[in-house]
Image 1: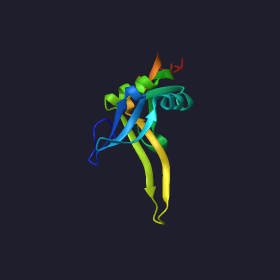
Image 2: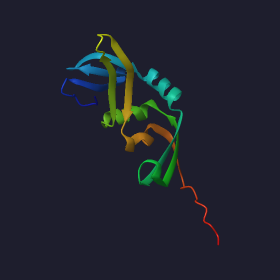
Image 3: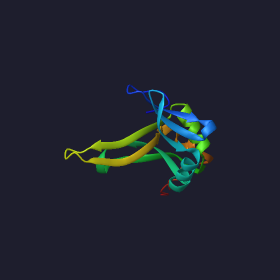
Length: 138
């Protein structure tokens, strides 16, 4: 689900007066995450990240990569996450299902950020130049 209601009436909505991100079903709050907890989890799980962009060719053991850019990111911030929620670039996945035995299996809740917006989660961005490939001298 995103900030727009899905076909089951589920959506995310930011509640700034309460400092929380609400999960709604048909405009009724059914769950929430406080901004403080979201910030703590961002710092625990995603303090720093490196994103590498590459062109590929081939597949399997013959796959080759041509690295284009390397971007180092640090200091994730809950306000950046909230901006991404507002823009529809965060997707919430509730990863729970009922097993054939009747028991429940919960893989946890995942906040997914669209790939092209991942760097926007961070206060610090350093774009590094591509790695230098040594050239053989005859």
